[in-house]
Length: 115
Image (cartoon, rainbow, N blue to C red):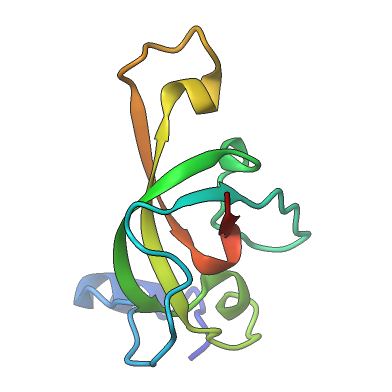
């Protein structure tokens, strides 16, 4: 299903999920170090720019979901795992960041490589 402005209110009201029942092998496990790809697509992405090129640790594998970067443009579901990845503040903002600060981001397989 292609997401159009007309159907968004109904999806939000129903609590629609992009989780799908497709068997896709996970690329990562909890505890794996990953480097976020430095992607600069001309189209939609859910990859925050400030994470590109940074190293984090996978904390949780949420399972398989529709990949929004392709689905938003009618290019297919491209099912893949989505993970919670933890970054230290110092990795993201440098040595001046407080030592205990962390940030977690939900990221798809296509955004990451083993570190």
